[in-house]
Image 1 (tube, rainbow, N blue to C red):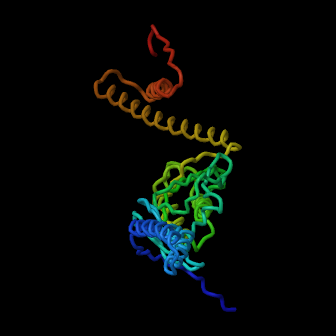
Image 2: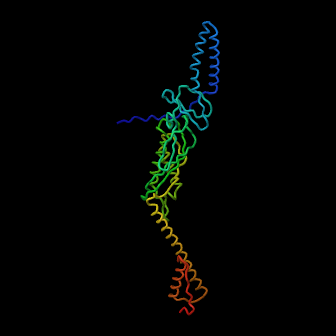
Image 3: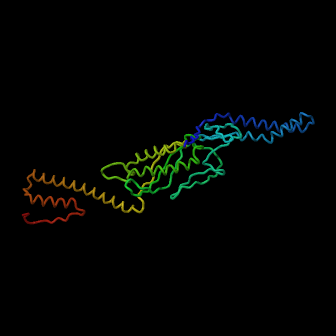
Length: 327
């Protein structure tokens, strides 16, 4: 069965004339219409009657050209359609004049007010802001999604959240290719975070390797690349994507903390033993070199045992002074 090709609309910048000149001309015509109405009403000729009719018509419909005056601020864009057909995008700052019947389109804005993403600890909500502008912001925007519970590579449940710095790169794709580009990137960010998190363990031991905790730069790069691939069709550009919260899930947090503490204690003990053995070797060598005393194997073993107890013990040693012969 043959599939219908997807209709992808490419962005085209609209070169609109200066809107300030059109506004000035419309005001002049309004003044002329008022004057024509006064003059036509004061005279009883055929031309004066025609002048009055034309002036009255302009007074009733002359406000329509004002609808075509658009003001664009820096880092703003306005996607325009005329009777359902995409006509272009205004991206330059200034005052422009377009067809007064053109309609601005922004799917992230409802019929009453634009939708903004509000993120709480448990869920992401979309709320309406008190503005009616349908302009698209081309600024870098921040998406801070809620925490997710995900299993890492070892199967341990972890809580992870992501922050994404993004902006609109193609206004036509953002408006026409997806239903709501703000919700779209939010959902794709959650999905990408889940797919990347399962590729890494939470932490690794001394053998090295990549992990969520120890390889933040690598994980951030993979998040950015995968998320950019997913939102490319929506005309969005991912500037940065990073993990902002990373912790074990509450149900295993205590057990994992004990595990980390045990690993730290073992590692510390290994360093202590290595240092103690080196000190014992040095002590025996110095005693032998300086001919302090002659020790047989049994006395050397006893000395090594005592030194290791002193150096590796958790508490201060309590020496016993022998006032007699050591033999």
